[in-house]
Amino acid sequence: MRVVLGVGGGIAAYKAAEVARLAIQNGMSVQCVMTAGAREFVQPLTFATLTGQKVITDLFSSQSPEATLASAVEHIGVAQENDVLLVAPATANVLARFAHGIADDFLSTLYLAFTGPVVLAPAMNNNMWAHPATQANVATLRSRGHRFVEPGEGFLACGTTGPGRLAEPAQIVEALLEVQRVRQDWQGETVLVTAGPTQEPIDPVRFLSNRSSGRMGYALAQAAAQRGAKVVLISGPVALHAPAGVERIAVRTAEEMRAAVLARLAEASVVIQCAAVADYRVAQPSERKIKKSDAAFTLAMEPTPDILAELGRIKGHRLLVGFAAETGDLEKEALRKLESKNCDVMVGNLVGEGMGFDSGENEVLLMFRGGEVVNLPRASKTVIAAQILDRLAPLRAAHPAYGR
Ligand code: PMT
Image (cartoon, rainbow, N blue to C red; front, side, top):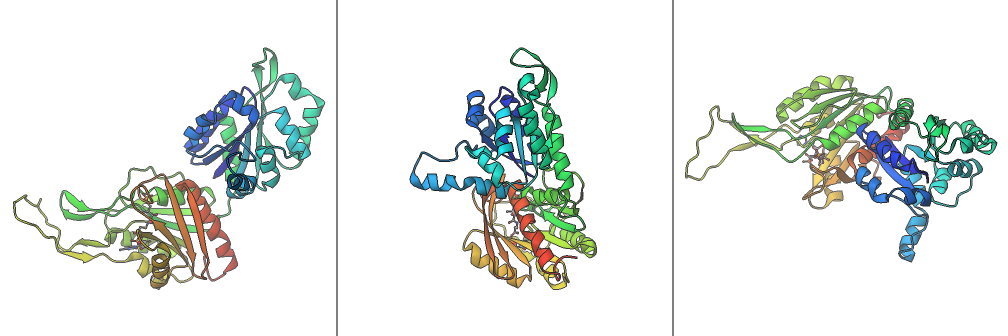
């Protein structure tokens, strides 16, 4: 789930860093927006370092007219790209501006443009919290369906005691998890995801493989499970934990992956073939460790089974999504693979040094069978996975031949 974390200008702003950290630990991506007040208490660098994403601080950029133009509409992009808006700490001022629709900085403007669920974690002096003006604003915001994580009681930074302390970070993240549980737009689907590399043996101790870490496929599996799908993850050897709620089947070779995919195909409504399957294997792996010698050495290779192409022939009404890892003409090659492997969607992935493989981030081109092409710009694999699922969801609904 993609979270925009708005940080208001109060002493509790420092606790928002822990909220961001915990949300990320729970598989969410976090984009921070800081008010001018928040920046008096905590440096944007703290959040940028924790989240790995740029922290948004201003509605208008002062750098150049082009940057100003881009930043003037950035709140719309941020509103569209995220699933939930959390404000922690939500100060009395933030609550008042939200309640009255005053849009005079990035956070308050984003609030008006945002159509998803809103979670507010207030923190302020106890008298400010109890004031009828604040309570009226809280009532207005509640009436819009926004969720409040109630402030706790205790010793406040201003020296008084009473209700007004920011709730504990774990409670705030629990509210996010609750939102996530409610957002189940993939319920009813069974998604087969493949991930990671395959290893093709040369002898008992050596193999041929590639640099796939499994992160992209695992992010897709996690996102689909969080959104209500039953997920079967068929994974080559990787150093990742299975995401919660996902059934993982470990395989090693392309042949094993093919067998596992075919064994579970009947129950799948969507197949996402993200694995970096080896194209070739050693024709006759040695049963014993091959001895070193000074002579040149050649391995006879043969093609592995093309799992995706086979799925394309037998997919029926299932939605079939392939990945195309390319170092050259991405659009041309991804389109060729979309057609030759009879997929519904091909995810074109430029790969190379620091790109695609074994990186926390990705940038992909979605190519649809109907001819539509959508670029998903560089973002964490969690965000890219969520965006891919966003794009696949309406496709299933719009074309009854797809899915179910
Ligand atoms: O794992 P990460 O480090 O996160 O990296 C992610 C990724 C770069 C591996 C991933 O995003 C990606 O691009 N996966 C596809 C890699 C690949 O094998 O691409 P390809 O263009 O060689 O193959 C095209 C499609 O055919 C793929 O869906 C592949 O799974 C499939 N294929 C290929 C060969 C084969 N024998 N059987 C197959 O099913």
